[in-house]
Length: 256
Image 1 (cartoon, rainbow, N blue to C red):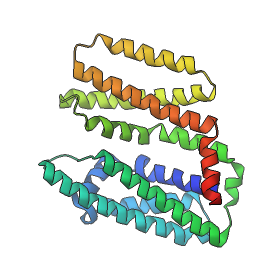
Image 2 (image 1 turned 120 degrees about the horizontal axis):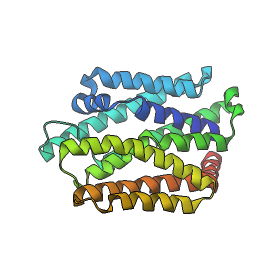
Image 3 (image 1 turned 30 degrees about the vertical axis):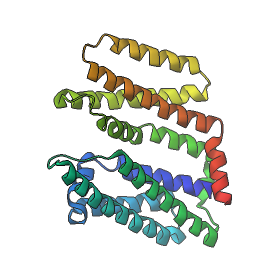
Image 4 (image 1 turned 90 degrees about the vertical axis):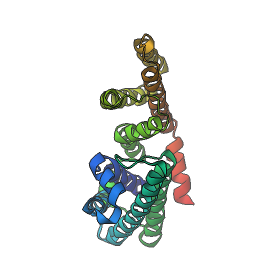
């Protein structure tokens, strides 16, 4: 069951982050079920779920994951529009840190519940998943999380702080920061697995020194907090995989 859970979680990451652009996300938020984007997204969720557990018996369960995912997205769009009107924001997208995490927890809980039902009734696993060990799938999951999901989490966290209000420069900073952050997180996870913690400290120190003389306090704080969040995510992922915490947790919830 652990491998199917990981496969479905990878499918969720691909569908909800890599295959969902900011434009699609904004259209879903602004129009909800009146936008065709939310239906395209639901189709991508279905395709990703089926692709990651490609067996005839899982089709109904993949449909279940997709329908619940669609319902959660519709509810989220309704809440976001109401919060947006309350804040007086008429233009642009609206992001709420707590709502984002609640949304993701609900999606993950749905995947767990559906996979648990499937495993109880079928107790079968696609043969191609036997090629990979649980540890290998966790490493793949960790690297995927280091890319776009981490960028989204950090962006939402920073946007709630309102540290850097110069919008044009902020957009440039975010675009550069996504690439830099992705590279540093991947490097940090690799270094954690190699137990090279000193090298991680050197990278953090070097990056901090580069920003030390920046006269724009808001910009400096924006970058510093983003850096700390970025490395914190990478350390949690790297240590969780290397020391077997995630694998043990998967076995525990699979047996339960």
